[in-house]
Image (tube, rainbow, N blue to C red; front, side):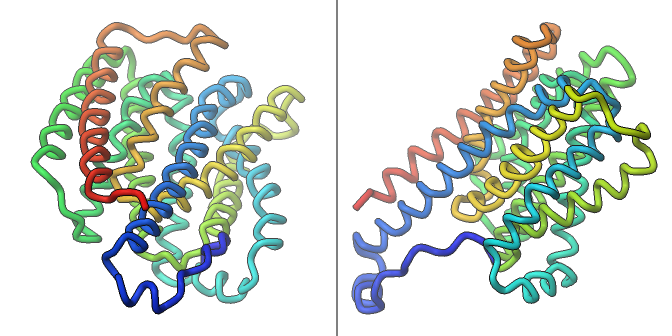
Length: 318
């Protein structure tokens, strides 16, 4: 069950008399605009993850622990206030679809922090930029969403960019970070498709439970005791704004747009995340990594912008 109430549906007579007319097109455009706006805002929040992780200046498991604690503290009252059918929502979580979504959320959130600790923000975001291709392929497999030749060509260009970035890895840590980032991207792609395949799942509850599980996993591995105040503050921002709010908004907005389309707005995350860290900490990358990242971003941008223009013509506004 989604915690966001659906807008009122038009009268049955209007929809029945003209299921393919202007009124129906207007509804579709409104839902799509809502989805794009929500994902855009969540993307702006997601772009701050690397900055908050660097600000925390802690080991990965300690960041995961406190990030998850603050995410749970932020999500719990929100879920209690906004969710009416709590018993049903909790029951859905122990069904196979709910358990899979929770597992993917835990894997994605833990992998994100771990990858940022192993390699540069720019490298992680280069891998993450392939999310629209990952979700597109998973959508083809699980939802039978069609893929075009343009999709395949763009995916090949992106793969070339990933290969260049991987070849420029400076250390074993960089290579390990890329592997973890790839697993994180696969987890997020699977979660986006799962949320769309099962629209009845309570996304806030999924984020809340996954935060509690991540905290339990990290507790015995984290540094004992309270971190310094500045580090704790960075973890609080990381937990509430990204793992909490942005997490839920990304999944909710993704329900109203195609699986691969979310990548159009994620390009903003790819561009902004390294920028914030460069401005604050002067974290830079080499020319090969920039070239590989540029190829990935260009491939995603060309494909998704062309696709968006084609569908805007096919779906006129009311």
